[in-house]
Image (cartoon, rainbow, N blue to C red; front, side, top):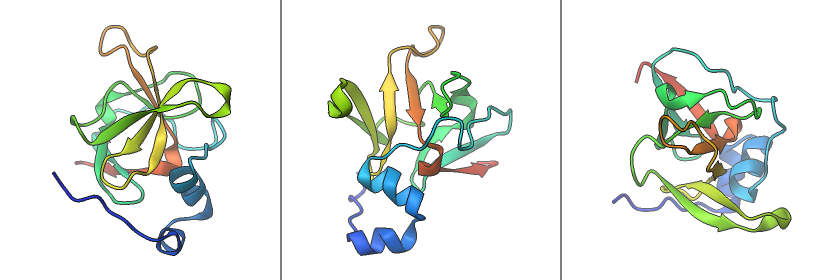
Length: 133
């Protein structure tokens, strides 16, 4: 297993845009339908915006109508971690990057029944698409 990436607040702020920092380091959420949530046939991998770890495959992205990129599974087991989130008066499951602990979004049990039944609802500012991977 890879070592966790640890940086100071100042290092993360220097590397990320203010919105990326807010979402990934302060557990924020971008507005729905404000980012790149389109579903395309292009082959590629979505990487963590903080540490560049590969997280999700475009082939597993689907249109959930929620306004955020939605995937039915992570790229490989262990690339993301899930933890309970009781903030904002709700019980949800937070999804974080296993390599750098960046907040990515949440996972819900209402994904496509014909695949995993899970919907990884991910902030688009927390991921970067690498076409052709």
